[in-house]
Amino acid sequence: MTIDHFIYVKIWACIGQVSKSEMRLGFKTKLKVTVVQSQLLAQHAGYSRWVYNWAIATIEDFYQSGVKLSCNDARKFYTNHVKPEYAWMNQMSSRVYVYAFDQLKAAYKRFF
Image (cartoon, rainbow, N blue to C red; front, side):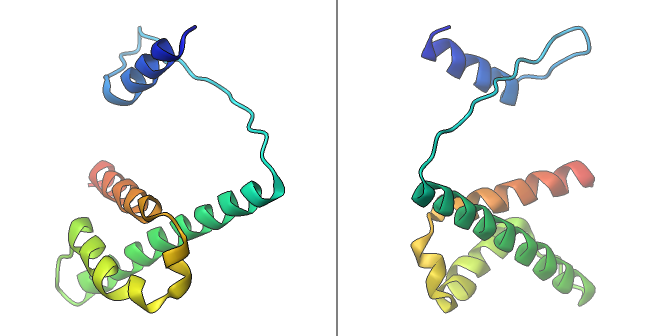
């Protein structure tokens, strides 16, 4: 299987609708990482979890006070007000928190 075919299958699995008669393809990959890479992966996973939990709590607090806060508004608030308060967040990739908000938005869309 070529790299192009793998990318095509991965994109199809993410975008396309799969009926009961079709089969989803999955790939299992083992990463060989160094100790430093392992620490970075753990830090980024923790950062993503922290942002996701912060966003849920913030949206819930706003909802309890009678204000509906969208995931996009929460992300803007986080970027402009919360992230500058924590210096350690600047050491992490910005895609991590953007992806956490994207996942939260998808979760809310599936839930409601």
